[in-house]
Image 1 (cartoon, one colour):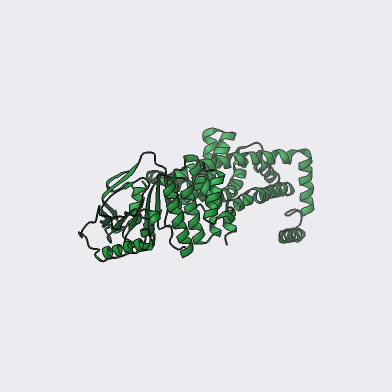
Image 2 (cartoon, rainbow over the protein chains, first blue to last red; image 1 turned 120 degrees about the vertical axis):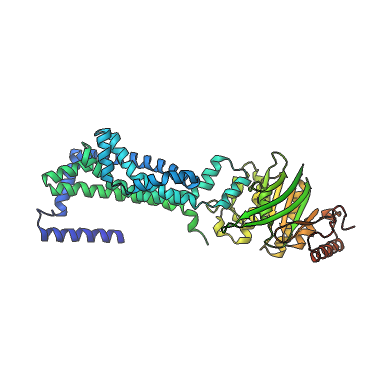
Length: 245
Length: 249
């Protein structure tokens, strides 16, 4: 209910601002909706959204898997931490644009270059978060698992993973928002499709309704994925905390 | 099956780079079917000793020979349950082969039947301790280590759990080592009592109890307690060892 109210307020503000600024700078919500519907009818919207979502999924999965593994190793093995730390600091502070441009230069304007560039941007935050999580593992439970001779998989599934889950969720949450931001830049610079590409076209033509239509549909998709996928996952992993009494 | 313990020395290096000796000279043997009870002042290093016996700490001088392939179970001083798994799952994860009937009986004895589906965070400390006991019993161990398992339980329950431990030890050819503060637990359960000194812990006395566990009358218990009290008073390094002399008739 409250969410709906804030959405209505957003629309109202937009409407008033559009009336004040004139439709050349800020078109009315109805105009943007009309463009979005037209794009959806022609199939272009779906194609571009699909391309972007595909890249997000691949880059996100890649970065999470690699980042979690590296983070865990750095949290457990001191030598790995010492060797990896300078690289981590470098990657953390490297501007996304530099990574994307270099990737396109070295690997060409290809899908592989785009996806790896996005993944590399997200990787260090996942590593840092998972390293923190690994350092916070409870040695008492580790000892318990050793005494009761838990086999490897059982230990991973029931002792390790539940302890890391909040950190994985945090890395996923912050990582996803990072990926949403970067994927459009990567598409703008070197892909022939995707929301970022379409926004680039709209920018060149100064077609503000088109630009807003794509941006807002994209934002809506992000919102839906966050509420339907990320938040339920977070809730599930912390289920055992809620009932504490 | 027997357990030979010979810890010559165990020390820790503190944050300030000082070495602290925690254990200095603990040697004893325990046989299958016996309950050994370790009594000593608090903070003397009993838990450190148990960690060594459980194989969790290998950085010490000396030797432990545990029976090969012995199934180990331990009740830690804190329950150490997995907070994200239910009571039943906590037990089943440690003892995946346990039959439902046996588990049900175990839960019933420990009065945990109503709590099977609860998470550890929902339990009182006393209940959580009972879950830890259930987990250790469910494993059907060959070597059972109990680190003050009955602390913070009310007297009636502690009494019942003591009987339960005794029954379990009687049913299985199992080596049991119990660390406790309670003289009551020691004299009721122990086949061999080991008295430790304060830090660094040294084995001061070995006190075998001749009367079988089930046949200890109030008089025998009282005599044992008196013996323990006398030894405790004479708690100085180098005092006479009572090894081999049964303390009760």
